[in-house]
Length: 240
Image 1: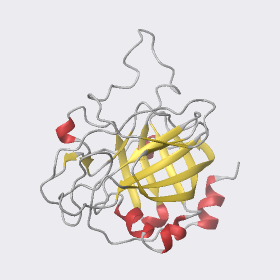
Image 2: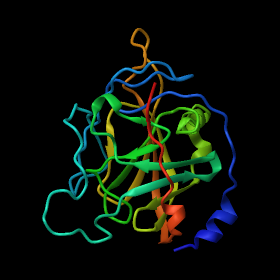
Image 3: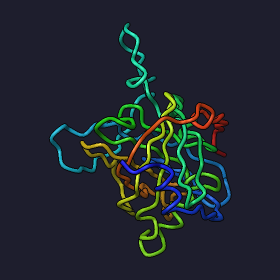
């Protein structure tokens, strides 16, 4: 595994991008540009890829409120199996967001000012897709959307993504694919990371498109993280 210091120091420099937002995910997206009144979106499908499956695109049906991770059995989960994503950083795009569990209230889904993870897919360090999504608004995932519009996002290929977890670990990923105009959830059986945001409103339906941007990243290395760095204080708000 390449060291974190050599990778960051040798290949990436943070580059700030200006922004003003859209939304994301599934049915009923929020409008982009300056925040306006939001429609009530529904959560995406939470479908794990079959162990032997090739890369797949899965539909987005409406689901009941999302479950709380690790809430079923009576036995305590180990630190690794209880691991959840707490922070996502894309240094080259000046993205740095706390990551939280999605709200169970569909009227609040998804939050602003934070990113969210899909709890029924995988998590860093385990086989399967770790899925993180956020609005394409200022201070959130808007830089991903803006970059995707330039040469289909080719400048993002090779960028570093840092993912922190609740058990004080830092996982490094390299962006390898940029998939525009997607209408289905992307999932693979091997370990990978997906960052998702929406692509804007559809004509005649304010705040809704059904199309999303998917950025796929492959794992590079992992190691211990400073506790404070892995536990930023999230301040989620219901989008307006």
